Image: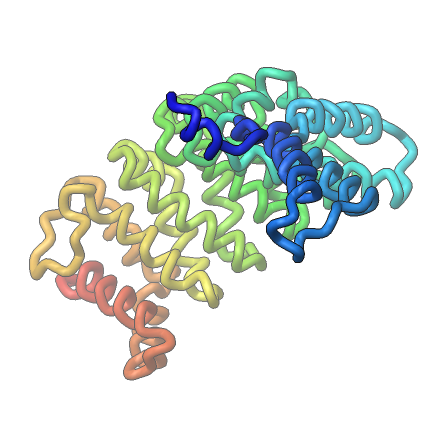
Length: 340
């Protein structure tokens, strides 16, 4: 390299940063160089307060997530089992759960949460005396399980499904979050669905969305889950028919509000097999399960025909309830057109 080229190079060139700590050093060094230059009169030296603020800000971006999670786990272990049921302790537990939730939406962090023993606090949260902690515990399980086979597998091994089924009978907010957690654990994860089919569990879901349920959000989530599972495995349809699900859903439909289209969608998924679930086609070939489901839906004491007639009449030419109208029309055609 010539002397002329050397003369053109700056005497001091800060090394390019490779990480956040390097970025902090780079910013400080660059500012120091700026203090020495005379080519830009607008550059001002960084005072101690601004330098301290920059250091603090950049350091905050290098948080040790595992350490944060371990601190939250310790807090929950210490306070959820405590007999000191103060509002202050409840808030600390709630804050700890919310902090965990902030991080475990990242799949790798969710997996790390299991590896550091985080799943051990889940049963403690689900059995807490505080409804808010039971609710957040359910929500955390759902967040961990959603689209994460590794966490789904280990949650199943922890036997939290049975505890979640019990919480379906809890107060409204807890029950809704429990259904969310169950849905996230089972949907698109065949081992958990197999567990339900072989060891029972569907009856817990079916019964809580029956006509005695006053929680429309719970009905909506439950009906959505049943439909998804019918499409996931054809054996679910047969199991649901055996559990009188057609009767439960038909009764629920007469008192439902926001959940109406979801309940009708679930009923259609029980009646129609996966191969023939396109209810837009003119003729649907029903299998034996579908025929049995239709026979049950026609029971006079359910008055399903009257319910559907009312939906069609009330929802016709109303865009805001178009889906209700369409589902009711499909069910009328499918269940009652050929009735003799």
